Length: 82
Image (cartoon, rainbow, N blue to C red):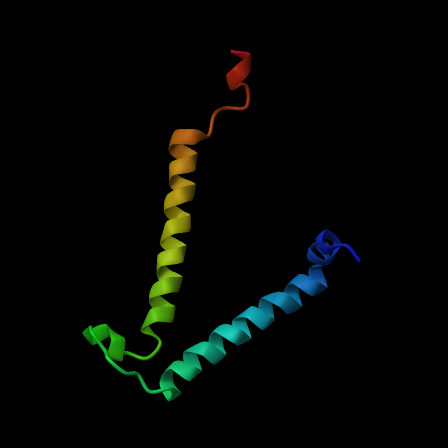
């Protein structure tokens, strides 16, 4: 089976999405269990902070990129016909 056909299947994508959610939950849970050494900043002591910070940063980057694309890069449908 070709790789592109795997990603077109909605059942496969739903399963893959839940696998990624489960993996993220396991990593956040492991952050509570695994001891930390050589902490440099106060936020390093907060369990799950890196995961939450990374998620929020990713969402903000996507919102910023979509806004810049919409305002500065996107042209009207008939832009080249004018």
